[in-house]
Image (cartoon, rainbow, N blue to C red; front, side, top):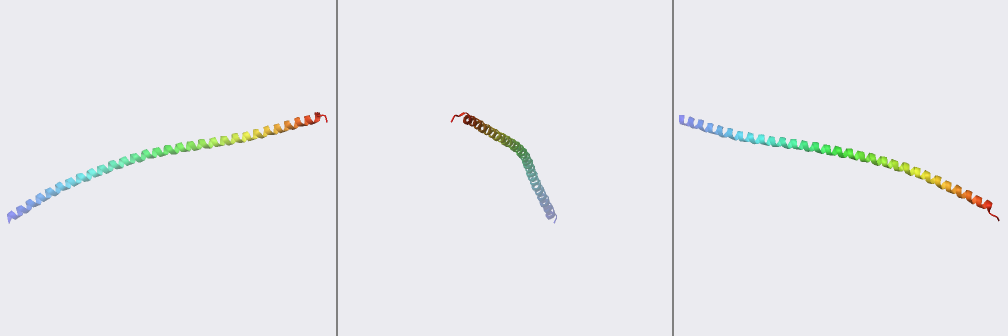
Length: 111
């Protein structure tokens, strides 16, 4: 009976040793996977931060461009309005001048 107990104890020790070794290997694999997961998460966070900076810069550039276009449009509108006023004054002056000259012509003509 003692041989059976010693054999059982031996099998139990060997099984515990093999189970411990397997658990150690599994724990190392789990730690390596967690390490890879953390590295991937850090890389993703870095890429997201970089992309956010790029998007913020693009939004700022677009806002500046939109403001410049708005100012340019307003300047063109103001200049166009001024040109219309200048054209109206020129046409009015030309019409009055022609009227005066035609009136002088009619007054000085001998019929």
